[in-house]
Length: 398
Image: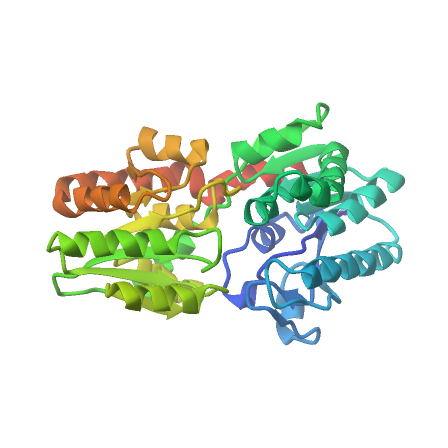
């Protein structure tokens, strides 16, 4: 008799949504002769802030079951409505769990914390082995944005308490970085498996997208890439300030290519216009569009604001796949060490536009340095970010 694995994931992109999401990839690669797999997720698509169609014909075309659970949704990443939306989703997930006959393993993504708490409690009551995959740190990520001494600790304490419960309940812990795993292990001393598996990408998929939709430029423009959310965690203004400094140094052929959308998009556009630097905002791109556009750039930036909770994030895996030299302002020691030890680019001081300009100029002026960093970053992708290799460790847990 086949074993049943239930994935419960609040945030993911399904295969036809042109994302690069961890959980559908794993679900599709588990041996279906040994396991029945069901992926439970929300009707609300977080990155687009819109609802999925429960009757989408693509749902039935996968080799695993997909179940969409109702969630009201929200318009802002940080909002009381978001908290309420997650609580409603958690209640609906709980109702659904109680309709199921048999589950042999639960693979749970955290966040959101409210959903994860419900699932962890259910697994404990039913004595079901629980694998928890730590994708982000809540409430730490919100405390960075809404930091009010003492008050923010009091406000976020219930979320921290629930997160601790989820981490402690895990029979196996997986995390997207060493930083996140260490956080979970502060309360869990008994997990049978403790894995760090970067989000990564499928290098074959990335390379095929690049080869199928080649982007080439025959000009003297030096292109700096950024991919991802245009929100409060990402210091796009610091990059714009650094380009203004470079312009003062008579470096006028730089184009900052910003690929993504987010709540601060219009603010960043206005700031670029005010500073009179050359920035192209492409908006949201499908993954197959983004890959060749990224590959055609000269370097990439990873500009994270001071105090941010992020660690090894999606964009750095894509930068590695593209073989781009990186200029990094992120304070996370784990990624700064990778930049230095693998020699994939240069670390700059967080929030320091002049230091960022200096580091960009070093790469701008030194083609040999760029070539070496490019080769090193692609090697990093092959060793640490290629899902074909790294995700086997997750699948082997089952």
